[in-house]
Every structure is written in structure tokens, then in C-alpha cells.
Image (cartoon, rainbow, N blue to C red):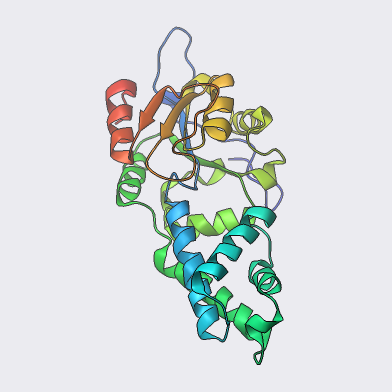
Length: 264
């Protein structure tokens, strides 16, 4: 296996002989890739728990505000400045005004929110039980098992570590958009993944929850698409195209791979 510069995925991956192309022969998929958020775990449910835990901790540390008001301001800050913004709790205090922390050091209130948020990460950030079981099963097959995830590299990598699924993935097949240089739904992202791993789109499967960022671009690039519609903010959305398959959990994914694609 070839290696690359530190911080970047390797450029090539040797497939098992029986998964390599053979003219005139229909073969099983070479690879399966997954999104992370609202696919491997419920990002939406986790974020709600973590934000509310942070607000409660800030109130205990001296924040003078109604819980509902503070939570609403936090949600608005995240919507306006994105989840990757580094000053969510400071911005909440700015919005609530100096009277909300009068007599207290605002840094202590902010730190209380940060600590509570990260404590919730350790406690609540877990994959669905069916995801863990099916990823473990997939690790026993010759298929390449990868990730294509949008977001800040270190944050997405941290999720994989905390979710405890890294051992089931192919190390060279983990891609974060910040590292690759293309973000979803840019089709060049998916082309670059295929190029680095010497894969063919018609023999790759992508599993994701977002119809416009996961399903549409992969459909256009000739991948087999699987939309998971379990929960999350994209569950009710529709894209320009339909996924080839739709599932509610990873047990359905396993049955699909076994029955329709001969994966075992």
C-alpha cells in the first residue's frame, strides 16, 4: 500500500483478487462508504442533549436567564454562525446582555458550558446498536469499508474515535472533505475518492442521509446509493433524484447486501 504526506490518505489501495475487474463477469461491489452524521449515529439527538446540558451547567454556574430563552439563543447562534464556530457560549452571553452574568466572571460561565458539552460527548456519543453489529460483520468481508464525511477534519476524526468503529474501517478509505479539498455535493469529491483507491463507481455503494449532498451527487457519478431514513434533520427532505435503495436501519442494509449483492 502506498503512503502519502502526513495528514493525507494514502493514494492507492490493493483490492482482493476476486474484487478486481474482470471483463464480462459481474462481480460484487468493491467498496461501501458511509456518511457519519445522522447515518452512523443520531447527530440531531446528540446535539440537542449536549446543548441543553451546556445551558443547564451555565445556569448552575451563575447565568441569570430562563432555560428556554438561553437554549433558544444558543440554537440561533449555531444556526447563524454554524456548528463549527468557536464562540457559541460567549455569543449567547452577548445576546442575553451583561445583566445575565452580573456578579460573576463570564469566563467561568462559558467554561461550565464547554465542560458540560464535552462531558455529554463522552457519555452520549455512540453508534446505533445495529450500526455496530453490521460494521463488524462487514469487516469480515473483503469489501473496502470507508467514510466520506463533510466537516472539519479533526472533529470528524474525533467522532470516529469516540464512536469506536475505527477498527471496522479500511484505514486508507477514510476521507474528510477539508483534507480532500472538495466539499459535498461537489462531484469532484467522489471522483477523487475513486481515483485514490482505484475504484469503479458502478461497483461502489454510498450510504447517507442527505438527499442533496449524499444521494444526488453519487447518483450522477454512477454510484449505487442507499439512503438511510431513520431520523435527523434531512429525513423529510427530497432531492433531485431518488436513491436506488432506502433503508430504516443497518439490519436492512445487511439484508440488502446479502440478498441483492451477494455479500457474505
